[in-house]
Length: 253
Image (cartoon, rainbow, N blue to C red):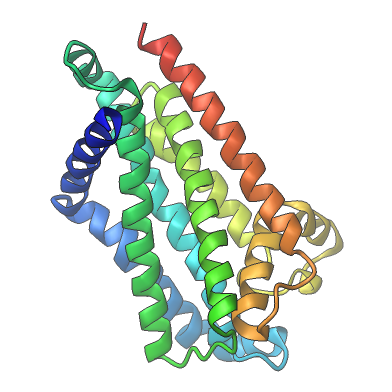
């Protein structure tokens, strides 16, 4: 109970930083929506043929959801890096604060803020024509996969935030994940890419995750890459979580 209360306090602290930062709100909420509108209304007609019989707004929404998460988790890296470099961690250690609550607060606040931004993206997608065929069960499975993905990438962000020497370095890792999203089936089918790029796109983690979400929402079934997507999320979550704890313990000595 003591650790849970401390985690709640740290979560509130992190969320206050988020809502008070206009840069964070613009990047986390406005940018994914702007990108979705840009792709749909500028490139939509040109890319419609590549998405087959599926409307391009239906095709692209799962990719925008994943892009939204990757944009948002960068702030978890920035906030934990700021705590490490500003010395506030040493102050927390001198107080009766559960050690697990410091990283846990950043992780929980990242999950909550990312869930909010994803909800905003989906609402805007509905307003401009997104019409999924998935039922309640498919939406529930989508929620589980999304939560796993947010947790996995959040803890990965925390790892980079702990390792980085500056705020710029802490946030830079998200660009690597963005490249993986753009070189995946998020915006166009992997089959329409060149052979070398297609091979990379098909075997990197973003493609099975995007494909599974698309299959759940658009086709109403989990699709053939469901277990691959789950495996990627769980493997990344476990590895990032254990690595973050190890790095934090070594730096907090």
